[in-house]
Length: 191
Image (tube, rainbow, N blue to C red):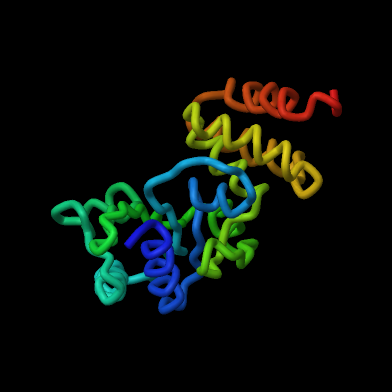
């Protein structure tokens, strides 16, 4: 059992819900052609109208179990289900998507092959936004590589507008300027 087994199990489980869902995070970055290491799986599901108890039951049929006590209560407070694919011991985080950007990103998801699995994956453009919100060193590296590989598929006006909205909400107005500087570094020929 390995990471691809966890991806397959999560993809199959997500396919059983009526709600839109997709992979995000490191696996999605890899699916977009960026070589990097990850040892977990991140996904997201449209939260409106979703019964978390039902979600946990369906996931359990695919050997995906909560990895914290009171996982549903935790998810209601933090908007993420912390899970583990028990056969492979792969950690999974399933975010609950409520925000307009998240809903839009789910609607734009594309099906890609990840090893033997075909799964809904966030677009490169939306991954850049997700990564700009998280803004860890790993995320900055992912952004730079996504821009280098997919700049022709990215609407930078949209990206910068949404990052600006998140920056304002997070009370980190410098985030947008930092993103623009990172974009310039990733696309030196455009400067």
